Image 1: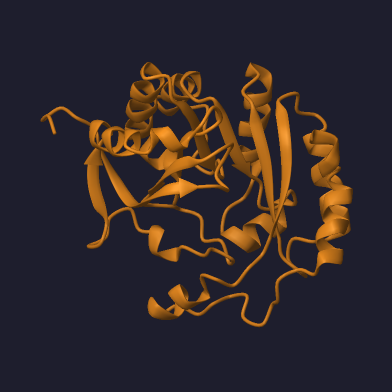
Image 2: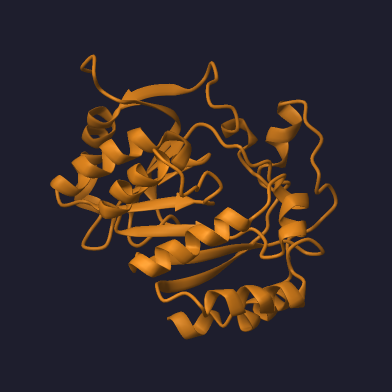
Length: 251
């Protein structure tokens, strides 16, 4: 690792990701997130720096990923997820710039919370988008009040980011986690669909059913799980959300 290399704080990597973009993906989960989503299944990614995290430069991660390139096929590539990757903008920019130079498809999985049009963030973001093939965009809640209750943050800048990506024609997949009694209100799903229809760059809309797989991590960290007792949505509830979000229109 050179002295001038940008170091990333890495939570973990996955060699054969199948739900983090098209094809088979090498997924880099970054450490650090300011959101405090009540349904988060990786609360151990919240802190920017931990004793268990890994530090690495872009060259190291790219070299690791290239070992699995033969499995990616035509559609696969590298996805950077979180935590929240935009908190480590310099590292992701370095990684994606090098990946694109190698002809590798790049995808960014983000909730958009760090987005601002202020400098120097905005200029660096534009550079990152230029070397990003696809953005997986998580819209937790279209209602600003419910978004604050669910995540601890408002969503004005998050929706603004989506508008910006639409303006520049950056391909995105919209993702929405469906949580019974929390994010499954018909009026909010209808409002989210209305917002999505104003965007000109949406290739796909996904309804992600809430699960409790990460609940044990909250307990291990000594945290009270906010959604205790809430069960995953039924197939009927998922289908209702898919219908209201017109998911099939994007196939």
